[in-house]
Length: 453
Image (tube, rainbow, N blue to C red; front, side):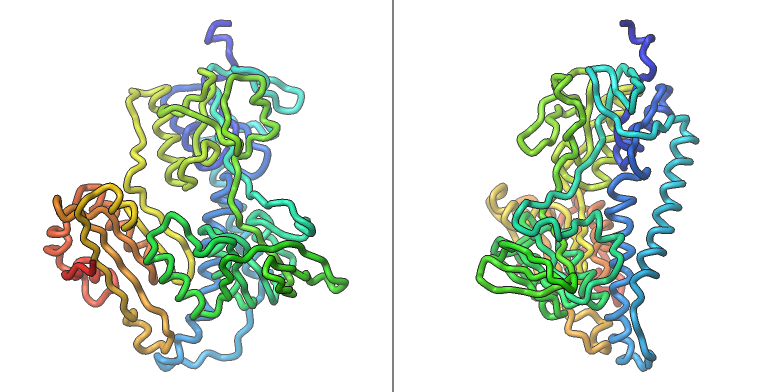
């Protein structure tokens, strides 16, 4: 079969962040491209991830904002929260974005094939009873929430369902220790639910800087989120009134209206037909690829959440861009995974770039640590006890800033700028010689003078 007898140069399975970017770029570079999608365009991020989550975070902040207003002389009248309004306005915005994604793909000359794509060989994909062939196949199917099986696990929801709940719960449990669990504990609490977060380990947010993890735990508890570490659910029974009776591994029993599991995500490779190819997978279903996103089957590539790396939208976008250029453009594109900034839209926000203190001490002999914890200027009048935390990790020998970490209002907005500086190799001396913007919380990053180690 010569290359010219294939239907497409590139056939993409999955119209999420990575798949859409790769297909658009490949088409712009002259390739004939189609993308296969069995649900809404935009993938996890647009439909049941970053976008609706952030809208819910905004919505959940108002309860605290109303409370803070009194110290500034505002009287806020009677207030109540209407869940269907937030849920449905969010859904309308997501549908608008789905349409935009359709227009973007159409405008780039990418054909959209609706349905579930199942690979039937190294160069063919079946959708329903139709088979499409391609010189190159890209798997960009992303991940899916993982919920363990236990007695009563059928009564729980995942991050997929939480965006469409019929009723808002008065009492909620969030299970998990990653950023999704932490964010939803804040969302439920801010919207008025009595909220409990359960994590089976001693401290959540593994992989983040330890000072930051402990600071966030204290702040969340102070705001009224009930954190239960070293705790897990053994079974759930449904009561006649629809509420849930939750039995914990410490013998406690809790009665709640909703249990959300945010205990990780798995690559969505089941039933994809990979057994008809030489593609290699790990035990958790993620696809093994080389530095060019090529699988063990030379014609099949994979990127984004399905390869089990950093599960972040901008990472999938960068990978999609690199792949398109390497296949159909000038080539030589490599994604640099060092110093990728990230944020957790917890309450208060977390943002981080570069190395944690523990990682830095493993790699470098002489480390200086700069830390600052203070009350944000807003809260001098708001009466709220929230504090802000900042930390810089510096290599003493080269004076290079290796990591910047923050907990506090707008942390994501602040760390994005610092990420540019750290990627450019900024030293602590450059931070120190930079004039601060006054009065802001961000200026603290250029005024930390004394190491705390």
